[in-house]
Amino acid sequence: MKRARILALLLGLLGIQLSWFIAPAYACGCGAMLPDPAGRIAVSDEQSVLRWDGRQEQIVMRLTVNGDARHAAWIMPVPHRATVRLGDPALFDQLAGAIAPVHRTRYHFWPRNGDWPFDDDDTAGDAAPPPAAGAVGVVGRQTLGPFDVARLTATDPAALDHWLRSHGFTFPARLKAALRPYVDQHWEYVAVRLAPKAKGTPLRGALEPLRLAFAADHPVYPMRLSRLASLPQTLGLYVLAAHRMQTRTTIGGLPPEILFAGRLDTGKGALGELAAGTPYLTALTQRFPYPDRISGDHELRRAPADTPVRQVIHDDELRRIGGIPAWVLTVGGGLLLVVAAVAVVVVRHSRRPVTPPPPVQPPSPVTPETPVG
Figure 1 (tube, one colour):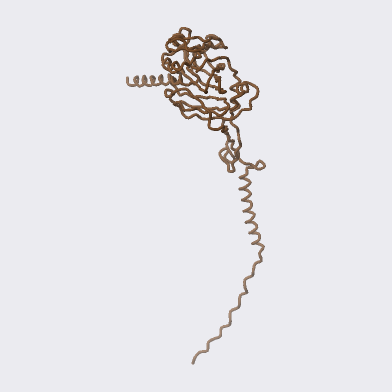
Figure 2 (cartoon, rainbow, N blue to C red):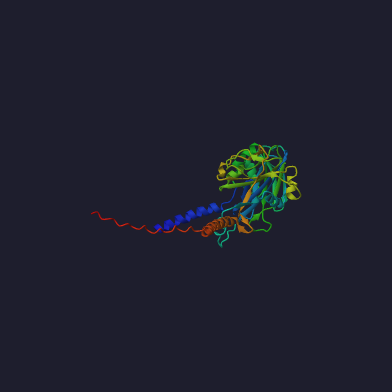
């Protein structure tokens, strides 16, 4: 009986831990991700680009999802009327190349692990005016690739909840309270419903990017809905502007880390098109170990200086001369010099003339004593 209770307890704990791993991600940095009730979905990677030219803001976001959900949706608040269209997937590959760390060789004199004679055979591999109270206004609805996009206005979270449910959007009850600050500020909403191209196929992999554009007197990245997440969140954000940018506060997360800051040589392609007029790129990442502490949206401002930042990866290499480790030549040469000096001293010593010892003088004759009579 005792063993059965212990086994039941262990299975219960295991079930709780598994539920943590496969729990649906109701929120991500871009807004709220909402799977269908019978499925689970998790955002394994989120990449977002925010472009601000002083008057208009654009956000291009791409999500990589995993799970068994066959339909999902998310909702993203925006401060002003937004237009929505598909983005170019090549943008994120070009951004990754632009901020890639530079490799620099750093030489060391003395051998380290992996250098001769300490090497071994093992090799290591090396994110319009508001309608009447309680009403929901449909600004527009469009189909973009696999996305059903609805642009909405609302002054009551309950009315928004009713509209989304009646039009096939799943909407957790606890999201209504989180939307209240946006309702009070008369923000609008972009609701996106998506489904795989092949019916019955779970949503997996990278989704097509979406590109939103709206008027903005200062850049803002909506993050408030991420406080509903049950797991730690990570924000990865590229910011394109005329100068280096920084967040005003941490909004409840760890201090953001700047991965890259610098001016781009804008050219052709998706990145060149988007960066035209806003050539300064700031790439940052931030972790939110406790999402419920997220206090608001990220507001960005100009940094005090356009100081460039770029990650540098040092490739340590043993210094060699003519293919031979410098320490071998130095130490070996030093030993040779010592041996040579000793040899010279020995040779010189062997060639030095030997002074013969002085001749031995014969003993003086002894005079016999005269006896005293």
